[in-house]
Length: 205
Length: 188
Image (cartoon, rainbow over all chains, first blue to last red; front, top):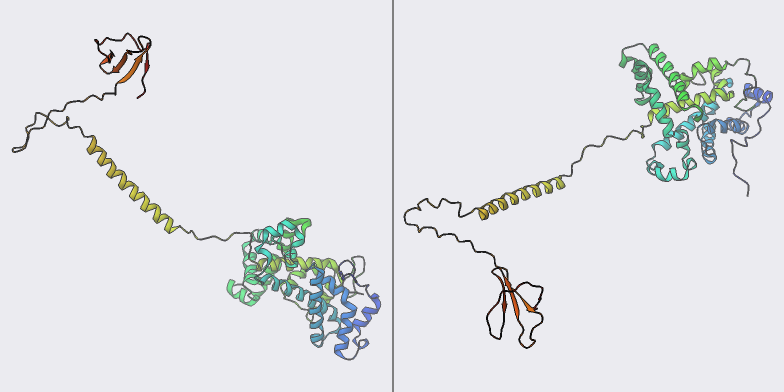
């Protein structure tokens, strides 16, 4: 029986750079049928897509599941890509969004293994779910600490955006500032959060 | 070429540099840009593992802020054990009442009759109180058989609070014993 495919350790060999660039830059070289073109894209980009997914979910079987979701989305929405030069970026974004959606779904599940911290600690980190590997308690605590160190204006904008889900215009109205000012605060706040998270956790990221 | 690019591979000619992309990653994490709006940015992200890694940390921040911090224990409202407190209160009240009652009863018992003023004339129509006579507690006398002597006519030593007396049950006068060393206790 063949061993399960590990996309992180044994990625498929990449296509030659020149050929793929040419294929993606000239969509006429893809099959004329959109579904066949999408299937060809998925086949050629499988390794890269799996590596993107594996940044968020470290479990090989979960990577398989998310990759299937990505494949379905690509097959269904390939027609929405108007600029051929944007196909690869669109593929990347589709894989990233699918991974984040999977993490959010798992995080909302009521039967998370958080209820059994002692059992999990007894068997070590390997018992953590793929969601907990990416979104561990240590990381959440570090982010909260980093948030507390932000200037009030940036923290306020980030909490309104992320916790309450307000869009930029709503935040601008709430805070009585311009939309551009909101985006500046969000950009600086997010950058500072990421930098402080890396400073707090160091090599654990 | 796959989506991910190793760091030593060159960027596509129209691509942005990693430094330029780094400044735009907060916008990507905030979903403020999309591949159609900025294809060069996402083309870079599709290639560059370093920027993918950086973007995943921005995404981690977003997910962590949405997640409730479980490391902070929720404040539990104070819950008093009402039944236990009520039982304890009842027990305290009953105990205090018992103490008061028993103390009053003890005071009534211990109140000396002699302390009442004897010279005080009783109310008209009531008899005068009797004189109180102390009655000493008398230990029961102990009887010893005197050693030696005629076994047919044993002598006995009787010890009581009045003193010691040698008694001859078969007649004769009583004599005061010199000591108890010559007597052994009689079990009866």
